[in-house]
Image (tube, rainbow, N blue to C red):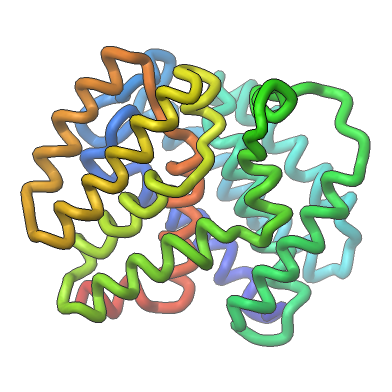
Length: 272
């Protein structure tokens, strides 16, 4: 897949913008409001994604030059610093890691095989997490205080929420006669129901995560039954705001799912 890296980097940016603009999404920034993120606006998120775009282009160039993982890690650290300086937020810190890891993994597989790509993600993640990480993060604090593994577990397992949950949900909905709109929300529902979201845990504990998962199952059922899932999500957004509940991990993995489906051409095919 090495020859596809520039295109994949562009689709990773496209996926992040598609996640941002998907509306409604409970607790998250979208076209309607900022959800449970009082410090964020749509414009600030867009500014952040411009930094992500430059970062991913640099990673693709670094991989094309045959540089080692340490070089790509340095680019990620620099992107995080630029995000804080220019956008005043670390809102896409998780996506910098996830998208960069997928792009690096893509350079290690010869063909567009999702099983091979997942395995490459896991191998690279092990190398990454075997390195010393002196600065604690919310995710590491959650891991230390509970059994939750968050993004670390997701990466070490080769992105099961992407390859084993989100993509099958999208494809199943299309196969049963749905369109891109219903398939996207089937995918969101599956992610909400399954992702061990450390942002939800950090803000609202196990009860918050349980709420997200239960709402994910309800969303999946509403999509299946062709119910008013948009009305349901709008109502849940108000509930999430009242509890300061959000789901940053779900958002990052949804963006990654959009990106991969854009890269395979399935998003455009579903819209035709």
